[in-house]
Image 1 (cartoon, rainbow, N blue to C red):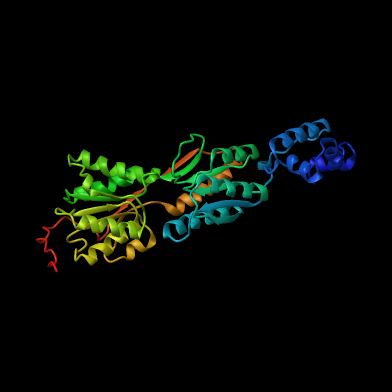
Image 2 (tube, rainbow, N blue to C red):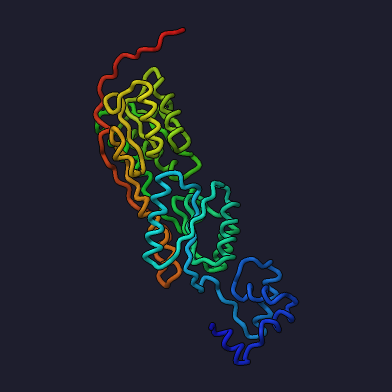
Length: 353
């Protein structure tokens, strides 16, 4: 029994029905305001809060009531990338004695994130973890008022300095991948990027460009392709690159799924990997080591990122909120798909019909 309820039973506080009658609202509405539930219109909340105070009640911050739930939102669960993040989040929730509630919503619109936030607040939650998607400013303000922490993993765009973020060293990873190919002796290095409205993709591309500039190599925009992650995007971009009059001897793909598309395109064009074309990915998903050839890639600590996000939610509810930004290190993992360049055989175009 909480303190207000005990005092009401003892007669020092009036029952909520009295407060409701005084405020001209229902008892459930008074209860929602008392418990800082978000689903009450602002003018009503203000009026009821005033009446509660007059009768001796103190509105309780909802974040102070532990529910045992941590909410996590993903765009999809179709990729090994997403699976690894969820696995890490579930591991942390289990360690902290919480239940992880996973919502899959392919809609990237911030308004859709806002619907998820409102639903979680209405049900009750100890904190929210959003993967890539950033809730709109109004939804974040609702969370602040309710005392419920939000952490965004690998946000599409950071923008708000007050946002709690867990990410990886994407710029460093792009730099290391390209430096690796340069050290092997490649000079004509292409990249297939991720979507350029996402911070992670922008940072990986910046790392690629910086490595070339540091090495005194030109940045040939003809070799910069893509704009989306995924096998299909990698396949389509690689087909364009392999048809160039002067094709690249190496490709840095901004995700492992993209790299898998490159491997498929190379096979269909009769280009051998790594003899004719070296390929480097990004993520180090479990299948990367089992591809033929095994994929050189930049390991992104995906499981650790999910774990860190839930841990940061937990810490934000305690007296030790921890850092607002957590950036985990990437690591280059050399495997068989990257070797020093060999002389490419003369191009043989198919006969014209």
